[in-house]
Image (cartoon, rainbow over all chains, first blue to last red; front, side, top):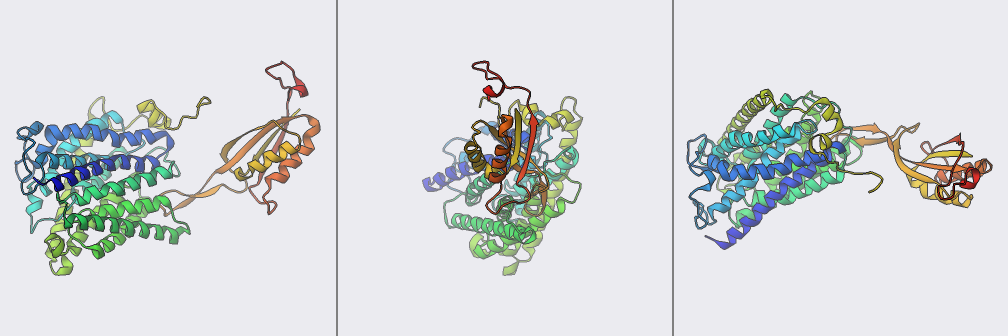
Length: 406
Length: 116
């Protein structure tokens, strides 16, 4: 047990938790004013629901022994793990690894909610959270990090901090959700609170240092490198997105710059333990440009992925996973990428991307279809509730009270 | 008595209220509103920085009730103060004038011109 590593990982875990309320504000600012509480609640309640699922059976299914595809229930309720147990191969307590991983399990389903804001039924969402973390998040985390098949496929798929497990997984699930829940009746013309969007993006950027620089589970040079490349990619993508916006419209959108930062953070996530700053720069510029184009194309389709979860997290995650195989530097993370002559790594990365996409899409589609058919649940609020706004109809609260007495 | 409703640029409201006071009209109220006229609103980003669209823009609606005799001086005060320093642009606003049948001061029960 190393107190330095333990202290850093406690800090990193808290940083990752902060990303979820950051996401809540990022998403909350983008919706109409009558749906901002509802949108924030989708994220905030995930902190409550997923935390419970994780300590009861989520961790066990993701990181318990089990098979190549899923863990088992031998660690149900974290049974048998005492405070002195050290996580295998590292110098931090196992309980701390469980905490750190819990924060990833919380934010992943919260990311999906961007697809169905302003119309998804809150009570059904609570059930969806429990089932999705159990049947989609836990298995995919097991494949990549828990001793499952993707971690040992080829030379091992590289996913330092969750590009496949978190971002591609959420991005693809978002498409399935948007397809099933259908389009909003009356989407707003513009975001209702741009400062919330920027505040949220800033909190995400800040928390992402824990997400990426914590994923080596040590306070060492690789963690510092991850911190640096994370910041570099976010900066490059934010600037790229902003400049394209400036070029196309003559003005630089703050929402665009914030979205660009998030796209860069998503793309560097799998790569952060394996690439240097120049690779990070390329990954950031690529993420800014690709995700910008993805948003542009998505807006012309019938798919109402309201807050661009696929265009940012899906496309950014896919680009990041493949780019990891291109730009990986053996001297940093121990694995060479295509530029250093190991082109096979790109193939391994593509397999990891496709497997995650296929499983996440089909499993999410099935889960939501079943929830839609269960009497008393259903995916969508009524038309009247949607018109009134989910803040009042689902939560009985208003975000901006402007009665005469205030 | 007449009611004056003036829609003006939000950035001009301070000079308008100052001009009203100078014209002897010390009672009014105003609120920020959203709307559009010949100016056609403002251009805003609709998505993540790639598309812009027209939206109704911010204006300020000022309301005051005055005796008939003050009509011309108050309207002139608003017209002159609501224009910018460069004097007269599309979007400077409009003034609506309508008759008011009575006014009552709550404290004393006075009515008519004495109440305003």
